[in-house]
Image (cartoon, rainbow, N blue to C red):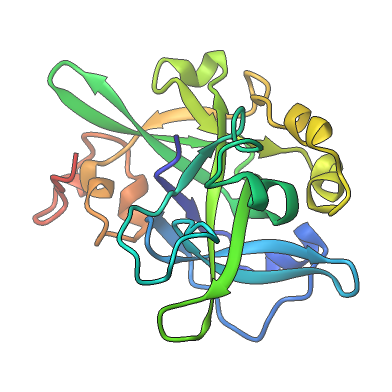
Length: 236
């Protein structure tokens, strides 16, 4: 699964990386992006091309009433998204790219769960496959909500977790965003990346606490700075 990630690259890099016009909003580096917050996403429209929008991380299915109780879904299994009632319309009609430069998982070590950071060796931005829905919210305003698609972990990540986000190669971005791409082709794009795509590093338990969103989240596990007062979370 993918329940936390980071996007620390400056906003001016997103435009040229994804060939998109940036909106007039400032993007602050995020080191601990959590569900239930707004996240940037690259969407596409047949008339205007790619655009950067913001989604609420936690998909609300189109058929659910805005005020109806029920958990929002932050991840969707790519193997079944085309058929599951909660995801199939979004998978077939509303796909997006979710920029990131790393994500977290938790590895069980004895009785503890130690946070692990997965990021590219060259620290470059990558694109996770996302789906979204646009619908009126409880206050009548349009709400965009989304989820990150997952697939089986590759051998590098499997020791940490059995699932990982679907990461799309730049040459596949247009096909993913195109409205007429077949379900068969979309499913083929939802595969694990190569074994050397990510490196894995144990990091500070500071990231356990969703209120912590700063560079200290990336400190190596057990570092002195990570042991400063208030650095320890207890979410997991």
